[in-house]
Image (cartoon, rainbow, N blue to C red; front, side, top):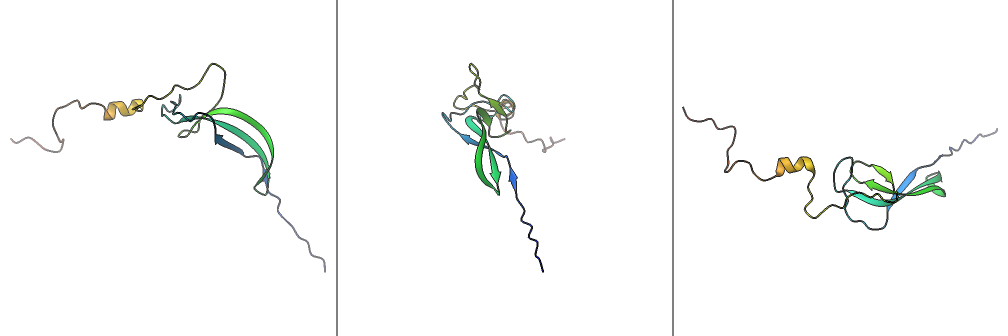
Length: 111
């Protein structure tokens, strides 16, 4: 009686991103959040979920919110977020009050 053993071999080439360098908050050009950081993107050959051989490596700017990755280019980097930076859409929503006092919309005036 012969036995046939079938062992699955799982392999792949995932990309892993690790932050590096100055981690100062920068403004993402896509989503306008202060979540861009410099990172190193590296593609590995994996066998059974164990990274064995580094295949490709590059330095990128990455947004932690919208996952935008832009290769680092000489002469360009995202704008540095100033202290107290607020998303442009939130400035209108949470900006200075337009009306003075509390004015709930559900109260009807007396007739």
